[in-house]
Amino acid sequence: MNETLKAIHSLKSTHGNFSSREISEDDLKLILEASVQAATASSCQNYSIIVIDDKAVMKEYLDYAGSKALVFCVDFTRLADLAKFLDHEYYCGGLPDFITSATDTALAAQTAAVAANSLGIDSLFTNSVHRKDLDKLYQKLKLPSKLCFPLISLILGYSTDKSQPKKGRLKGPGVIHYGEYHRLDTDELEKMTNQYDDPEMKMGFTPNESYKRYLDWFFCFWCSQFKDYTEEITAMLKKTDILK
Image (tube, rainbow, N blue to C red):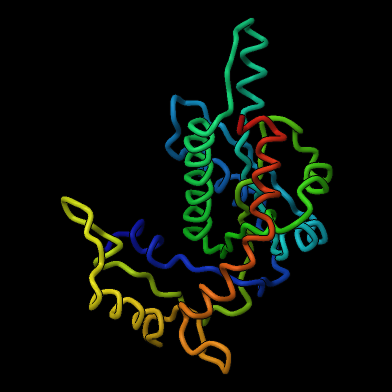
């Protein structure tokens, strides 16, 4: 296994237990320079990366605090401004543009995480911004009120617990399909359910009195809370003119 594959396979999330050690400006620069090398449609890079080093802001708006936080936003503002500067019309927004630009943004974010890992820096992806007051977040970060939406945040720092196990990942039938899509049959569904509960898979779930299986907890508890802010996110995407 080469060094790139080792870095990818060693990626794991650090849930809040970041030390007080700070990331150097040189390392931060390397991470950001690597991030923007990610693939992008039509060389547009319809995203912006907000670097946050204020730990109180991280905790209030992102729920976690490390040395640095990167908020990756889908952002059409720069391209709209360029079009205006050159006296061109530019239609931006709508579902196709959002899907493409959200993909570009996620690719840049993942590249940043891989780069950080290669430098010995730990990370955590979180979508906690969507569970906060989005209007307050826009004001705090001075995000453009139109054509910009915070998609995902990446917390960077140094974990205080290096022994924390890496969670397992599904990689067989149902995830990887060869030639054509394969719908799982009953036996395969049972096998996958058991994989989630297998301690060797390290999915991060401990059975308790309320939920004996991971997927019982996932469907009955975790998924239910997303209903509360789905409408808010949709409303913000429309308010910013990203969705028409």
